Length: 421
Image (tube, rainbow, N blue to C red; front, top):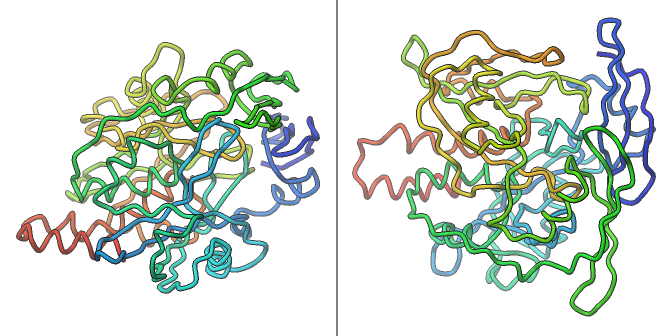
């Protein structure tokens, strides 16, 4: 595909809307997208070959051993006006041309963290947050934090691994956190805690003004009042209609319905090897192909599981599947800084596949990767952030998953080793 033109539709704070014009095999295709880049920056970015791109942001996964000797995950928790709620995420910052390791170090230093070691960049070069809507992207870096009394750092939320179920029940999460935690939660086998519908962090919504009238994606001006009566203005982008967006921003966690669904498809190949199925899909907002898991919109009248089964049938031709297991975190947010778009994640085993059932504009290749080949497969590739975060943690849990015959005590020790790796 060739980028012919970038037409700016809005000029406000935050992400703006653009119409991208492509030439695809002599056919003109237009696509509405959102970006925090200027028009010129966006055009230059999209004209770059995918292999020459570097990540705009770094997402830092911090791990820590507290004074009790317990393994902890370290998060940030900030109010996100696009969702009208606090959202738990990993610390994130701009790369500004730095290496991912240097950018990660700058991010954690900015949060008051002084002692960092074992900095490890992800093999995935660029990961797109919600590649059907924007070119917003990150690369992931893991660090070990060794500050004493990190729990007293006001910029961070430190959670013992064993306390994650209770923490999950009381909070809303970015998808990168949800998908990174899932493989760990599976091997730790902790008991779930019922979700709590906490609306204390919501501000009073005064008005929602729709600024554009595009078919699939629009920009809105949100006006809130804080607890002191001060007016707060925020610009957001959304696929929702105005009334539906207003209802979402006023509602509690238990009333929210996921906008999209994504499925991690496992598969046993003819050699008896465990595999994960990826799709390689042309994505217009990033002007290139992205490796991801099967995904799509949750259509009106569907629940997440129904949508998941439909997307698997359409995108990879799965006509017989195992149990659809939802991720522990439940619904999470793809790009909480710019939109309220959410996803519900599932995992399943594909038992039988036939031909795909794609729409005319869809171009999707099926990629079956043996688990043992995953580290080499993802190296230097461009993935969706949902796939990148999951794979990053999944690879760290393989040793535990494959040594199920060991004693419980040995396995518990290995869990600790895996989490702190």
